Length: 255
Image (cartoon, rainbow, N blue to C red; front, side, top):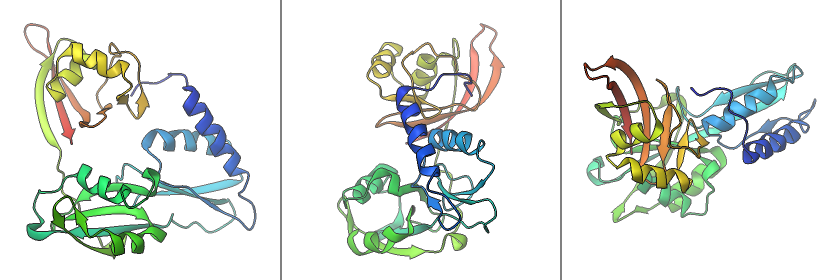
């Protein structure tokens, strides 16, 4: 991961707002956040490290969730989990007709905000599981009747009884001249490096959930790169060099 990068103005503002929210936590009051992306969670935990009077739990509905909520409480209180519920969505055939983007778009079209929705994962039993704030589950189940051209059925599900999600990422192997952002994005998404430069300038690329402004940024194993509207890449492993000095990479791509 890239360390030591100063906070952007937006990140500073987010962290300041979060620290102000912490002041609401006292003997008879706790705070639950909406779903945080990994970068926001990192900023939140950095602020909480300075508060020995507070404790917190992190939960996104299942192990290794990408988007998580925080339950923050006085250190002397008993811990609890943030109120996260899964909504099971099924459709005829329960195949791959619907994507993550289709499901997210349909849920947001009901009037929910992005931070009220956590991860959306495909279920081994077919269909999908959408992690949401518990008090939004019934509303979604009553109103999410169609996604695209398909009729769907929804029901709330206890997260501790969920089937494991299947790993729907696609593995990509290839070589790059360097670990620059433009080279890795070009390999992962099949677009030219000159096009990557324009996309970075347009603010559509994030590395480890942070906006970036330089296509020459050096990446490392384990980094995550997202391209708005196209999905994200994880650098699974750096596997040495070819005889011509190119770097062998193994990527995982999620659309």
